[in-house]
Structure formats: C-alpha cells, structure tokens
Image (cartoon, rainbow over the protein chains, first blue to last red):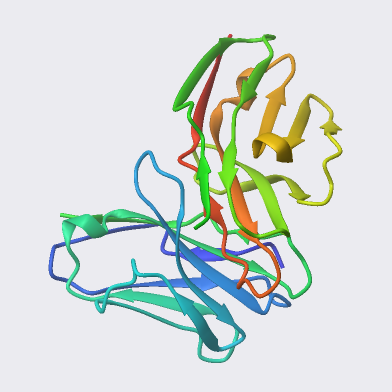
Length: 113
Length: 116
C-alpha cells in the first residue's frame, strides 16, 4: 500500500457538467475525510466517513455535492451542475481508529470553465 | 468555535537564515491536538508533527523545532539554517478531543520562500 490515491489528478469541466472524483485510502484505514482547498487558503473540511457511514457533513457541502463510501473502502465525491466557484483542489485523507496521524492524497484539482 | 490563525501570509528568507512560522489557535476543548503540515508545489500535505494539549514540551527534529505555549494559545514552528528545499506552504491545524470526528481545522497557511 503506497498511500492515499486520488483520481484524477486534474479535471477541467464546463460549467453545468457533473464530475466525480475517487479516493482510495490506505487499506486498513477505516476513517476517511474530504477537504476542499481554494487558492491561497487552507483546506476546509467537507465530510467524514467511518467505514461506510457518513457521520459528518460541513455546511460547505451543498445539495449539489454528494459523497459515498459504499463498502467502507474507496470513496467518491460527486459535484452536480458545477459552478465556477467549485474550482479548487479536493483532498482526501484517511486514518485508522486510535491513530492521530492522517495520510493525505495528492488531491484532485478541479477547474470549472 | 475552533479557529487557527497564521498571520504571516508570506515569508522570504535567504538560505541559512532561521525562520519562525507563527500559529495561534482557539478552542474550548480541554483535550485537543495540534499539527503542522508542509505542502510542496506537488500539492500533497506532508505531516511534520502532532502535539497533544497535555504535552507542552518543546520538540526538536533536526533543523525543525516547535514551541507550544498553552498560555498564549500558540504553536510556533522554527526552521534553523533554512534551505531552498524548505520552500513550501506550511499549515498549522487543530483537532478537537474526544467525541470529535477527527476533522482538522487548518489555518490559512504561510508561504515560505527560501532564496539561494
């Protein structure tokens, strides 16, 4: 296991299109987090999964956003009807219960044109 | 509410200078954790250190050192004899204690540029 993988690394989409990102955490990590990072800012929390259960969602996660983690392994983040304001880096992180260290992926950079 | 403030947006130093990155946090939790991450141009967040609220002992790791002071709610990071490879964005982050889902609250980041 080489760490947290995110796919794709870059995505350019037209406004109004739907996009989906994937995160593959470290296999033994049951906790998974999504963050959004806009230019010049720190990452902001979006949502948290413990196994397959989505236990917390930020106010930043509007109804156009949905995240899943169907079997408690990989996770997907979908944005419907993208807007220019959705342009950002989307980061995924995972950790295991009882551990305080988080492993982050390299992120998916979304550009909405 | 929890908050992390990194007042320095950008710092530029010449190689071999020492540099300190400031971090001030706000939380009502009695148990919490503080982190520093480095983000190179590749984008991945690289873990540097974690400190819990009960451990105020300062830590040194090679050229890196951290000064945690609960009295001033600060967790500052010093790089001694900076190198060009230290150029990156550095983030301070806070995580609440028990009952918390473990989400991190990040500061705005400090961009460090080390010139040769």
